[in-house]
Image 1 (cartoon, rainbow, N blue to C red):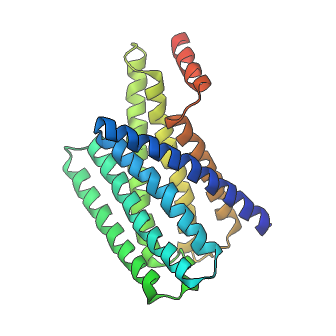
Image 2: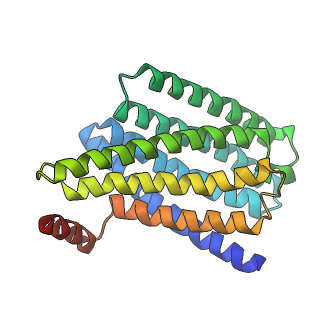
Image 3: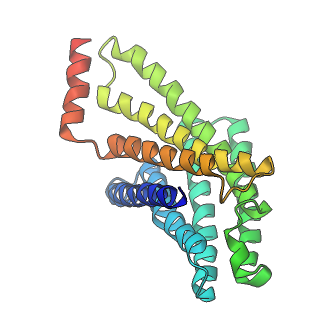
Length: 253
C-alpha cells in the first residue's frame, strides 16, 4: 500500500512541477513584455511553489543522506515557500482589494507569519535540528507557513469565485469573455485544491496524527494536487479544443 501511495504522490508531484514551471515561465515572459504586476506575481509563485518547494521537499523526505543535500534542500525549500506565500498574498491584495485597509493589514500579518516560520525553518536546516528531523511537517516552523498559506489560498479563492459570479452576470449581456470568466473559476478551484493539499495534513498533525505516514491524508493530498494541476493547466495553458468548447457554449447560452 505504501508503494502505491508513494507512486501516486510521485506522479502528482511530477505533474505539478511540470505544469507549474511551464505556466510560471510563460507568465514571467509575459510580465517582462507587459510590465504587468499580476503576471509577475503569479509567474514567481508558479516558479517557486512547483518549481522550487516541491522538488526540495521530495529530496528532504526521500533521501536520508548525504546530509548536506538534505540540509541544502530544506534551506532552499524554506526560502521558496516564503517567497511563494508572499507573492501570492501580494497578488490577491493588489489585484482584488488594493484600497481596502483590512486587506493591507491581512497581507502584512500573513507576510510576518511567513517570515517568522521561514526563519525558524532556515535555522533548523542550518544545524538547529538533525537532518532526519527536517522532514517533520508538524514542526511549528512549517505550521506557521502553512497556516499563512491557507489564509492566502482561502482569500484568493473567495475573491476569484466572487469575480467569476460577477462576470457570469455580465456574460448574459455579452459583456464578459467566456475564456477569461472561466479562468477565474479555475483559479478559485486551484486555490481550493491547494487548501486541501496543505490543510488536510495540517489538520492531521494538529489532531495528534502522523502526518508523514497517514494514508488518507497522503491520498487526499495526491488527489488534490492532481486536480489543482489540471485546473492550472486549463486556466493558463488551455487546449484549443477547450477554448473552442467554452466559446461555443457561451454562444449557445
